[in-house]
Length: 256
Image 1 (cartoon, rainbow, N blue to C red):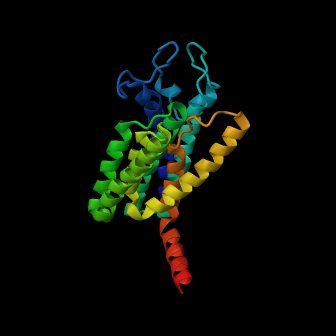
Image 2: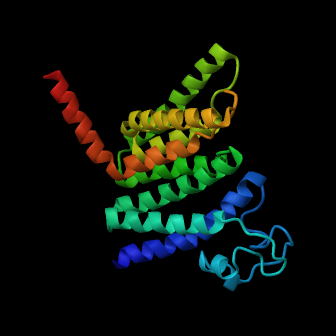
Image 3: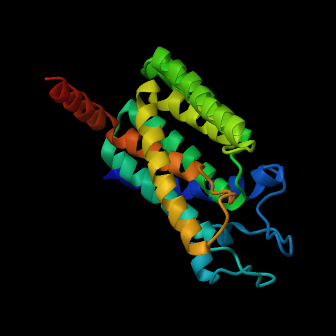
């Protein structure tokens, strides 16, 4: 319980930092300077007004100085990461995989929110993520599977986007998606890619179709794909071994 509680608390604290990344990275702002401040009145936020979740609730979602509304995204992102890290600690316990899971989930959580708000997947997160995935594989995993996953992850989506462009004359997928899949391949290995691609594409197609139907929007509407990749990656992270075993047994049964 100590490990679970500690990771949950750290998740809340890192969730506060994640909010900084989500707000500043797409705008090209420094994540270190200036310190936390209200984007409306630019008044510095005191430490007691910057406690994850609690401060937002006490201030009723408004700036103490100018009463400007503070988006509900802030406590949701903080509480969400705290919950995710607590659950990962419960699942992995004190194993080397836990450190990798915490890092990967943090990156995916931040990238998901940025993609939902801006349609961007910043290189400032995906490139270091690829490097961290490869570095983890050097010490605790399979570097060859990790390297193959990074290369194949980028290459598969690049090829799909290239074919789509040739057939339709327009871009169908941003390069940020290539790099996100490469990051997932680096952390999870090439074995995860078929599942991640299939599940994210299937869910994305279903949700995208419903969205277009409800909004009566044109097929040219841009729907962020990063969140679907992130969810599929997290599912493989937690249940990948079981899924791989199930698929292997299913394949053997079909061959027989």
